[in-house]
Amino acid sequence: MQVSEAVERRNSVRAFKPDPVRRALVAHILEHAARAPSGGNLQPWRIYALTGEPLAALKADVTANPRGENLDLPIYPPQLWEPFRTRRFDNGEQLYAALGVGREDKAGRLQWFARNGAFFGAPVGVFFCLDRGLGPPQWADLGMYMQNVMLLALENGLDTCAQRFWARWPNTIARHLGLPGDHMVVSGMALGYADADHAINNWRSARDPADRWLELQGFD
Figure 1: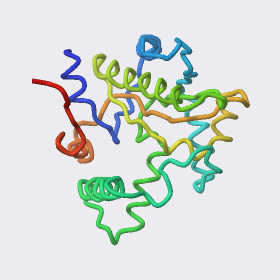
Figure 2: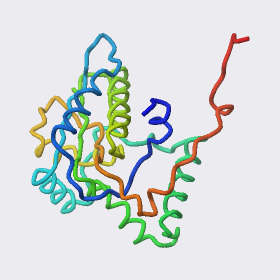
Figure 3: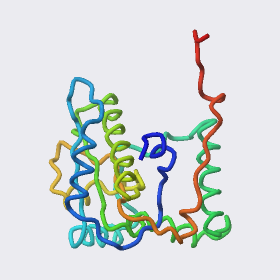
Figure 4: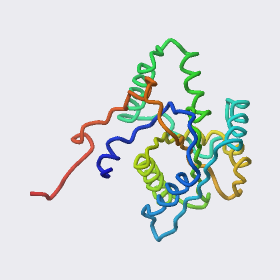
């Protein structure tokens, strides 16, 4: 698979088959992703992958506490401004439209949102963590590591969905992972085989045309 093909095909899959993923394949992806750029070669990431009983136990605890806990860091800035506010709103409307869940169907929307807590049925849940003393440059490093994971997953016939949703349960997740107190959960990620027949996987979020965000200066 060409890198350009993987970039184009990568999508946030929100419905997975229950088929298990081999340990060796998960290890291969997560280990090779560590070739991501890292300022000063700090390699700040700390990664946990769960399946089977450990994953089931974590999901059960999250289901029992649907309100979540205190966020270590907000998922979005407060009072989101333009153009980000509209992009987020439109994305949500398009997602629920693809599911046939109307704006007035609050219960249906909440029910679908809760599927985050089941990793959308994926057999593997991955957690991406950082030392709390690190700063924005290391967050960028972790983001590049996560992108490598998503592209390598595609190369190996798997799909993913990055989920900042999991930052809502820092204490519960830390307890299940045995995460050191000086570390925090930045994001989770569902990993597995996409359910190609599910309607949500036939929808892709839009991207603004490049002329709205790209400037090329000094070129012929």
